[in-house]
Image 1 (tube, rainbow, N blue to C red):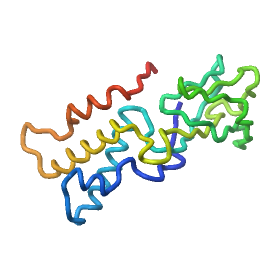
Image 2: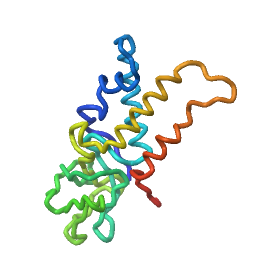
Image 3: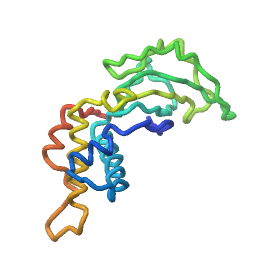
Length: 190
């Protein structure tokens, strides 16, 4: 089920001041670099865990409804469904009542009665679901371990900005960061 970002996070899970303190940087010469590293680290952590840290809205596109009416999301944590649309054969979108769906946050699933869901008029990408994901809107909503993993990843990238010697790799994530992310990683068989 393809998805694309509609609304980016309003903040990063780690402030520039917090990152500077952790890096022991007392000047503001590298602020733009550190801010970029924070955003990159958040994206990296989100990609590895399939967890959205700060609330974002994503559009999921489907061809048809699942037979059991359960839409299992590969990203999480689910906050709720903000809009649902069916696309007809001419490409016109018609809103569906979001009340048809139950957001099961524990299983990261949207559920609806299969017989209550109308058939889309377009065979490909006939269903659009706008879904809010994330731990919450504020940095303190993000679990501390994930925030610390971002700190450590920012530090690793900041300290290894220079040229890399033969046989060295900064592409490897520090093992401690990998260990911190393990318990948050969402696994999917499809």
